[in-house]
Length: 120
Image (cartoon, rainbow, N blue to C red):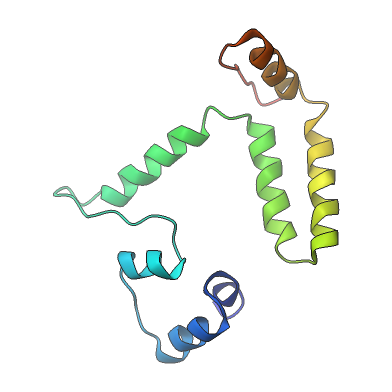
C-alpha cells in the first residue's frame, strides 16, 4: 500500500489514508480514483461480481496476446521514466506483430467482419 497507493491517488491522500487507517466505501473510492467503477449492491449481494463479469466479457473477444502485452507494457511502464516506458511499449508491440492474431485482426478489419482470435 505504501508504494502503490500514492501512485494511484497522490501522496497527500495516500498519507492520510495510510496514517489514519480509514476505510472508504465504493463511491468514495471512485471519487479518489482508487477504483474505476462503483456499483450499487443488489438483493443477491453480487453486484460487484456481475459488473466484473460484464467487463471480462468485453475484454474476452480481444486478441489474447495483445491484451497480455498491453498489460505488461502498462505494468512495467508505470514504474520507470517515460523514455524507458516507451521502449517497453515498443518491445511489447514487437512481440504482437508476428502473431497470427494480429494478421487475423487486420484481415477482419479489411473484410469488415468480427475477428476470430486464437491466442497465437
